[in-house]
Length: 411
Image (cartoon, rainbow, N blue to C red; front, side):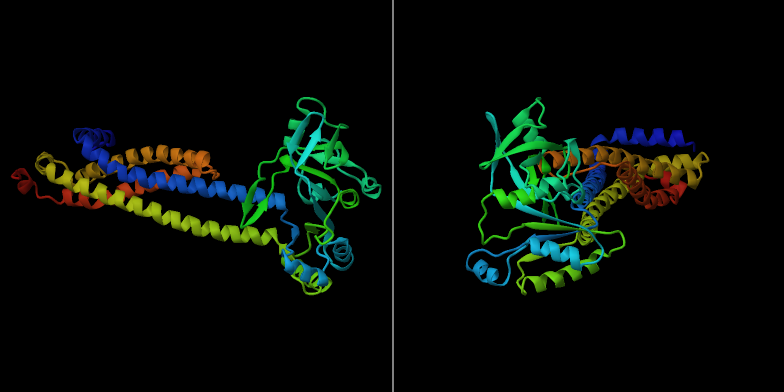
């Protein structure tokens, strides 16, 4: 039997039983759609994780202020000043494998004003090395330099959203803006980012679009600050290529524990470890989603086997006629395998469309990143074909073993 003849016969049989065939394909459609959607969600989450890790810096160790509130803060301050310039100096002088140490303090201001325009913004005092440590890219102008820090210069670098709202299509460089009661001059504008505003393993990464950076020395000298608060909210320690992030984190933890008198008013975040934890979580997610998709495909395969057994029963007399005129058992097996494969492929194609649609719905309405890759489509198509072939083997063998004489007498 030629392949095209078997295919035409399979399609004709499916067309003769439209409702039954459509219901059988639904199982494959749901299974393949689940595979596509699962792989798209997993790929999207992985891409976002890599972007977040890149923004945190894979060679960085982030030390964040964790001072308790209320009465506990008073007790903690008797032992420790919080993250302070003393910590920065001690890390630079004592720790090995350190490329740079970048402190950051948060300015108590919720908006920036320029002329008649104002915009909600987060304002930070940072080191001149913050752009390198935080993987920030400048679209216009420059970042701070050593002279700006020494002279407590009232300059700032603004995010893309701040620039758009305050200055629109007008040039931003050299223009003044006011934060709290301090006037600053714009010397740089950051490029748009894509990974900000999300979180990884509980660690949030803010978007730089609504941020304003000024020299940390300026922030400490010219903005009001509660003396009981930690001077810095964060210190980024960027390591050299030869340094081991985990070993360096242990050394830094020991150093800070001694400097802070045993007070745990800080936490260490190692992006490399976060990446490993996220990958482990991703693997568990893929296994769970794979099991769910596998169950759907199993149900679809059972449906195909059931419909093929019914088809064998319906075509018993036809099988006897074909055997009587010279058809081989291999021809009969091939005919029913092609029919099972046709059902699975048509259901798989519908499932691919459904899976892409599910991925888009998740991306648009659940704010979950999804990426439909060519690999996921190929895998889903291959799985649906395999399920169809496996499900059709038993019915095809059963059909080929029918005795021609008995088949011809079947009513």
